[in-house]
Each structure stands twice: as structure tokens, then as C-alpha cells.
Amino acid sequence: MAILQVENLTKTFGGVVALDDVSFEVADHRITALIGPNGAGKTTLFNVVAGTYRPTRGAVRLAGQNLNGLQAPDRVRLGIGRTFQNALLFDNMTVIENVMVGRHPRSRCGILSSAFQLPSKRREEESIFLEAMRYLNLVGLAMDSNELAAGLPFGQRRLVAVARALATEPRLLLLDEPAAGLNTMEKMDLVVLIRRIQEMGITVLLVEHDMALVMQLAEWIIVLDHGRKIAEGTAEQVGKDRKVVAAYLGQEEP
Amino acid sequence: MNMQQFWRRRPNASALMLLAIVVGSLPLWVKSSYLISTGIFVGISAILTLGLCLLMGYAGQISLGHAAFYGIGAYTSAILTVRSGLNPWLAILIGIIVTASAAYLIGLFIFRLSGHYLAVATLGLGIIVYLAFGEFRELTGGPTGLPGVPRLAVGGFVFDGDVEYFYLVWSVVIVFLVLSLNVVNSRVGRALRAIHGSEAAADSVGIDSSRHKLQMLVMSVVFASVAGSLYVHYMRFVSPQPFDFTASVRLVVMAAVGGLASVWGALFGAAAVILLTVVLREFLPLVVRDASGEHTVIVYGIILVVIMVLMPEGLTVGLLKSIRWPSFKLKT
Image 1 (cartoon, rainbow over the protein chains, first blue to last red):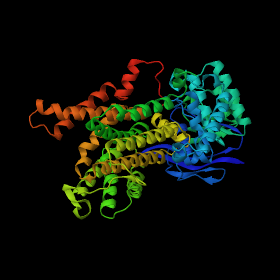
Image 2 (cartoon, each protein chain N blue to C red):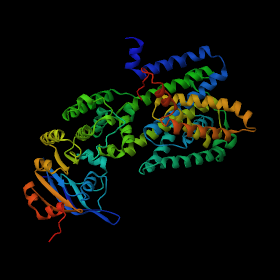
Image 3 (cartoon, one colour):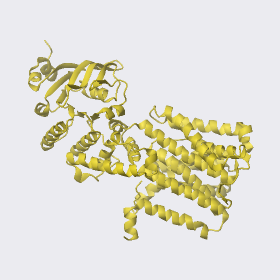
Image 4 (cartoon, rainbow over the protein chains, first blue to last red):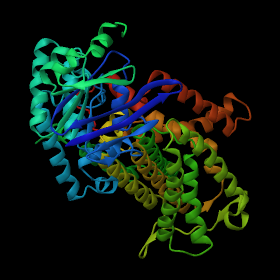
């Protein structure tokens, strides 16, 4: 069954066509990778799926439900989590607070119950903290919970972002270049973490340039080039595809 | 547990207690009615500044017409009690509802847009409301104002003296401080700080920024409305002048002096600016002949620019940071 369906998606910025009639499906519980040369439209696609951009044409469906017209926060509530290339943490907050913010869509205490310190607020704050700690533990950063996010090294910032996204309880997690800038050890940990996420029943769709990592993790690969889908399949199928090889090596198509 | 430990563990509770003691004992040793009256104005300004600090510091939005909300609260109280003979407490409640609804409607449209459109919209509202106070004479009494606002009373107890009113105003200040601290240190406060940190990231964890900004605006104007009601029941008279553009600018200066993202700073900002106003009133005519309200605005403007350049977090926060007082860390 497909958890995500992208149908004839087109996105133009002025005259520039960033996505050109892209269609594919992401199967439930499978790790899928989205690859392609720089400027292929991968991040644009993420932004359309997450609701940051409106598509020019086409539709995005989550478990059959058409998401067109829904804002990004609504889509988070429906189960789309994401991370960004540059982590994009709340640098003015501590690590644990960053993850606690991730519990926002799964908690409900409003301005009035907060102002009057109702018992429901205390209970909810407690559970927000404990849940956040659990996700921080999962990415191995429980020890750094009280550090200011701004002070963390790059690799760990990525992990906080993953924990923050997981805290929203996504059904589909979009990871934008999770391995960029990581060293070999960190990449190995990342592979383990992404497998753990899959075991939790979350479908992972990742954009990644590190081919070794993609080949290791992805059960299905979608290749974009100049805003178009040029191939999809298993690692083996995609690796043999002439169009894919051409796109990466810059050969002229015959 | 000794005092220092308690302070470290519960900084806000300690500071609140300290404030309650200082404020509670003030009228016991300050006998000058001029100073008590100044204390009442500081308290009313502190309520206004508190609301503005929440809006500016936590929601990242500027209101350049906050005096309008202050004025709507004041005029609602005055008109309903004088013209309709309504119970003053009920009038205060209606004032809150009117002010909150006005802000809600504005916010509903404004927060769909990103950027500082609220500043422009409130600037416009401030001018319109100020003119309306002067023009609708049958209702507001026009530029000369509306006298005869009754005193506030609870049962048989009438707040007829300055000291009684001082206690009333400062009780409200403390209650609003507690409410603000609770909101700031909650899921809502966290969401607001997240929006401040990165709006795109806040979006990605399902935070509806416009909704939270709107809630903060409404909370902020409710404070302003109550401050307005307290003001008219103290003065027992209302006229448009205290709600003009200068008043809005002065409120922004108070918030900036106090420290934008600091609930406690609001108190210091309000006190500092009120005292400065008193000093300017005495000394400015010695320097500039025929100095008027217009001249004090220039001074406010200069102060605002200097603070924003040197201490963008506000004077109080800036000074506290430069002192590096180890045990003095308030959680705001």
C-alpha cells in the first residue's frame, strides 16, 4: 500500500520549472530514497509534500487523502514529519526544549489553561517532557538535553532535528540530506537510527547525495533530474539505468 | 532550605514575593501622596508594558497603537458607568471583550501576512481611535472629556484613597505578572519562542504561527484594556489626550527599556520611563524654552534608538548581563 502518492506534480517559480509532471508512490514502511544531481528539484518536492510550497499542478496524497490546500502545520498533524538540510534548530532554546516543541501537535494545552496553571497543564507538561526525553534518548543525546542547541556540533544538530521530527509522531518522515557533513562513524550511526525509525513503523523518504548510504538503506530509489522523474526502482535497477548514469556523469543522451 | 537556595530553585516565585513585600510595605514608609500617585501610574504603565512585552518579545510583533486599546478600555469603562450607570466591574469586563474583539479582528487579517504589518495596522487604529474619542461628543464628551466616573468599590469597601488604589493597582500587576510568567513558561510560550527562533522550523513541527500570534495579541490588549479601566476609575475623568500617538510611543520605549523578551523587564521599563517623564517635566523647560509634550517625544526617540543599537535585548536585560550576577537568573 502506498502511504504517499505524488500525482503529476508540477511546480514553477516564475518561468523556472522546478518540478515537471512528477508522479510516484512511496510504499508504506519502506525506506525510499530520492536522488538526483544538484538542482534536480528534490528539496522543492519535499517542500511541496510538506506544504511549504503550493504545487502549480498536481496532487499530493497521504494514505489516500488529498493534501492540496492544507497548510504545513495541518500536514504535520496528519503525520508528515520533516528535517531540513541545515537542521534548522531553535537556537534560542535548549536541546530538550527543541524536542519538546516537537510534541506541540500532539498536545493541546492552550493559553488560558497555561495562564491559570490548571492541573491539566501540569500533567501535560510532564508527559511532554518525558516523551521528548524518550526521543532524545533514541538519537543518543539524552546527556546533552540541557545544552543550548546553538552550541552543538553539526552532526548532533542533525540528530536533534530528527528527534524533534519524530516527536511529532509522523507516519511519513522526510529527511533532507541527513548524512551531509557527517563523518564515517556518524554515518554508521545514522544508518542504524534510520533502520530503528523504520522498525517503529514510520515510512522514511530521504534525499541524499551519499550513494553508499543510499545503496545500503534504500529499498526503493526515485531519480529526479531537471525536475523530472527519470527512473525508479531498486538500487540494482537504477544503477544500470542509462538515463541515470547520463544524468550523473553529464553525458549527452543518444 | 535557605534563602539563596530557594531563590535559585524558584527564581520567579522568589522575585514575586520580593515584589509583593516591597510594594506592600511602600505606603507604610512613603507618606508623600505625590509619590503614591506616581506609584499608581507606574503600576498602570507596568500592566500596559507587560502586555506589550509579551507581544513584542514573544510574538515578535510590534503594536504602534497600543494606547488605542488602553483608550478603548478606558472609554468603555467611563461611558458605561457615567452614561448608563453600569456596575464598574461589569464595565471593565465589557471593556475587555470590546478590546479583545477589536484586536482579534485585526489580528485575523494581519497575521496571515508575514512581516510588520501589525505595526502599520495598529498605527492606523491608534490614530482613528484617538480621533473618534474627540469626535463622538455625545458619547465621549469630545476633546474636553467626560467627568464623573465613579470610584471602584467591593461590597461596602470603596477604593477612595490613593493608598487603597495603589494596593488595588499593584495587586492587578502581580496577578498579571503571574499569568504572564505561566504563559511564557508553557507549551504556548515554547511555541512562541520557537516561532522567534525559526518560523520555517516551527511550521515543520505543526505550530500554527498566526494562531499563536493572535492569542498573544489578544492577551496583550486585554492587559491594556484593564489598565485603561484602572486609569479612568482613578482619575474619575477621561479625555482623549492620554491615548494619543505619544502615549503609544512611550509604551514602546518602556518595553524596550525593560527588555522585550522579559516579563520582569516590563516593571523596570515602566518605572524608569515614568520617572524620566517626571524629571523631564521639571528640567526640560530649563533647557528648552516653551518645551512641551512634543519635546519629550524627541527624548524618547533618542533613548529608543540608543537602546536598540547598544542593547537590543533591552536595558534591564543588557545591564543584568553585563553585571553577571551569578544567582540572579530569572526564568523568563
